[in-house]
Image (cartoon, rainbow, N blue to C red):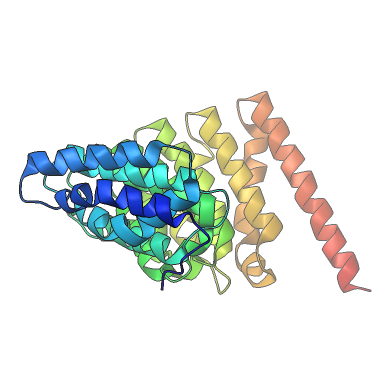
Length: 309
């Protein structure tokens, strides 16, 4: 339930007199009225003065209709709605209305959680993923009640034919996995990542391998490593040195932070990837492999010493 903050009531009342028609217009059947109303709202929420009052107006008056615009038939209107939400996020210092953010997140998930996507525009799908990223930067708790649905959506977004969506979805998946216990639900996402590890674009393979360790380490009960292990081996031989380096770093992260149970199952396979890279054509990668093996050896030695105390 929305609680009323300490705000300038006269400012809110005066602005609502000016804005209420525009708030109503953004869901009107007339596309021109919707466009005009959105332009007025965007201008209003761009202004940085009276941030508490503008935040309250968004939460209490604009949100409900604005979320309906995410389904508008006009692509430009959907784009403007996303930009208004970004303006709203920029108004905040640190205190967010968690229910508002949860409603925004739920609306985005609904646009991206099934194939074919409800959101038909590639650029808008990319903008929605970037918006999800901004929300997790600002207030990651907005996702706490949506982890299973969010993980399902990530799995679908990673299957997007638009390479930029694949890349940004992988980056977002890694970031959210570092902050919240989403790993239990990421099986479909890991399968999608496994396919993307074979993508023709180097930037997709690199973003994919960079996301693997955070996602796998987010799962506390078991691992999805078996899904991607063969392609991890393949990427350690990738034609791109950046992808090869990213693969070695990912493998080392798993070896440094996996549970004992996972290490007992997969340690030999992972160590072998690092050892094989000691003969890489690149001297830099040879040195990186040696450095990572040394770090892992020192950690195992420390763990063995602690176990014997």
